[in-house]
Each structure stands twice: as structure tokens, then as C-alpha cells.
Length: 223
Image (cartoon, rainbow, N blue to C red; front, top):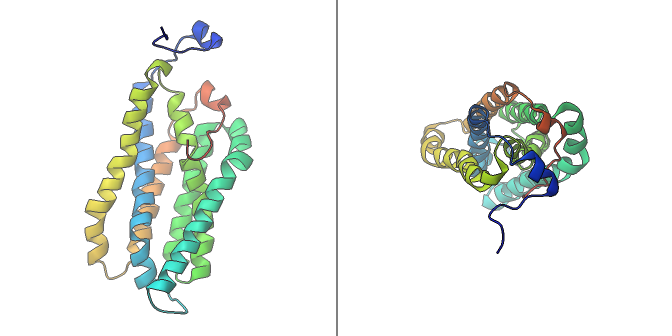
């Protein structure tokens, strides 16, 4: 029969790790505000590009092209940074501090789009900055969370962790949509995103780094 709990030789001596409930709750809220801003961008980008930007051409095709390039820039930065930048930086600063700095950069990127993103080139530049936070969002929080729970109950805590993604997505779609729809200035989209990421950054900066987070490896995007 297979054992109920699979452990490496090192874990057999060290145990399954310790769960820190207060720190976990803090992480959940910090990550939740990140996703509130990110999902607002994902859902209402079309409204922003259509109503708040000056495009050389009109029509849905031109809008779609701008959005496609913007998300290409975002995802390219998000793909390259975790291994080539975030992993070495986190070994020096720690996972929590590295992620907090990336989320702060994301808030700045959203603010930049809010104030100066009325042309495609300015939007792409802003999305490159936003991509710093996106790269961290799809990699570091999972490692940070996993270092604060009993490894034998990882599935349970991962399920709760996923709620900090799903609930903000639902709020962005169901609640924020009414504000965006009624606003005459659709740049409100990035105002909300910047505020949400600012709150998230503040929460991440107030999470204490532990020894495990200081030395843990970065999880690759998509894992």
C-alpha cells in the first residue's frame, strides 16, 4: 500500500512544517487585492481602449489589435522575469520583500496608464511595468503560501488560497462593472486597479519574512 503522506528523507526528520494561521490570512488578503486589480484590467480593458484612448484607426479590429499587443507585452515580461530576475533577487531580499516590491511596481504601472496611457505606445510602456507585478503574481505567492503551512495539508490550504483569486474575480465582474458602466471616463478602470494594487503592496510589505521564504526557490509561471 502507498503511504497516506509522502515524505522525503529530510522531511521525515523535520516534520510536515508549521501552519501560521494569522500570516496565512494576511497573505490571502494581500493576494486578493492583487487579483481585484488584475481582474479589473482583464475584464474592462476593452472599455478603456475604446473610450479613453486616442487610436490612429477606429473600429473593433483596431481596438483588438491594441489589446492583443498590450497583453503580449504583459505576458512576455511575466514569462521572462521569474527565472531570470525574480529568482536571484529573492535569494537576496527574500520572497515576501521581492513580491511586495513587484506589486508596488505594478501599482505604479497602473497609475502611469491612468495618467498617461492615452496612446498605444504609452499603454504598452505601462503594461511592461505592470508585467513586473504580473511575473511575481504568477510565481511568488504560491511559494510564500506553501512555506507557511503544514506540508501534509497543502491541498486544503491551496484550495483556500485559490479563493483569494476567485472571490476578487467575482467582485470585479459583478460589482466593479456597474461603476465602469456608469462612468463617463473609462480610465476609472486603471484608477481602481492602481488603488487595489497599492493596498495589496502595503499588505505585502507588512508580512514578516521567515527563514524558509528567505531561501525558497521561485515557482515557475503556471505552476
